[in-house]
Length: 368
Ligand SMILES: [Fe+2]
Ligand SMILES: [Fe+2]
Image (cartoon, rainbow, N blue to C red):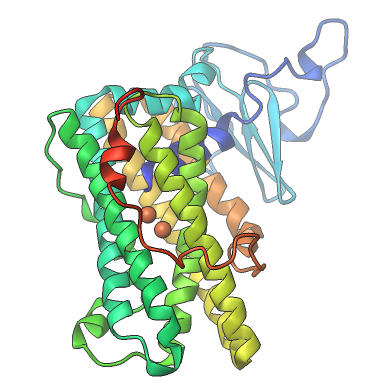
């Protein structure tokens, strides 16, 4: 479930304050605030320019500036401070803020058959791969962790169910799943980077070790955090759409449960003497994931942008937002993915997967 968060975070980072009240510096009767290297620039609204050559390319429509090793982007004169780095974005084109709202961008994707097809196909493929991995791990759990097997199996069934939900959304619109571009395949890119258990190992049929279980749970802890955040973003910005609202709410609840399960099981293993290995594995997994997430996000947005015919400034601004998200995560945001807290809901995967969940999740409001 990748494209949703890409849109949301890129939009959030790029336009966090863009539609709020005018900045103090622009209010009449007040002197303009002079800060950093952007302070003296004229507030042209139609001039396309780049103020500094720090960026690899000059994008029309907004300015990218660097000052004292701090990357500064101006956007409608508003500022965004992340982990001590000040981002400023100034759009010269007045239509930029509206076209970057998460709701608008997601609406564009969901209203276009080809974009919707790619979005759901990427999501379905990632979920199905997760389902397969969990199914194999459940079958290979070592005897000392036998209690985990049914929970891992349930985890796998949930992910399979999510894949079927996204496929059902496609079919309801008369669409067939599309191939997933390799550069947009989050799950495979994680595996290629050596994160989690290799598929070749899972195909071997040899019993896993406790260390393997830690690697699996650490991988899940990090990726379920991402999934939980993505689905919450989708609920926030598209949960009221009749076509996908119920589906994203069902999946969001599941992803929250998966995350709770990972916290609980990792804490149990930490108490059993594996704390140091768990922390080391979580850290390596999170740092790799944030870079892969950035790269996959960039690829997904490029594919969607081509389908939707986004203008160069719009595509470039969203790409800048993705880079800023990575910067925020690399400067400390990754730590949220490695902390362990006992969840309010214990044994979240203790029961069977919901019956008829796919049909219920993809029914329109009012439908049984
Ligand atoms: Fe999922
Ligand atoms: Fe999940």
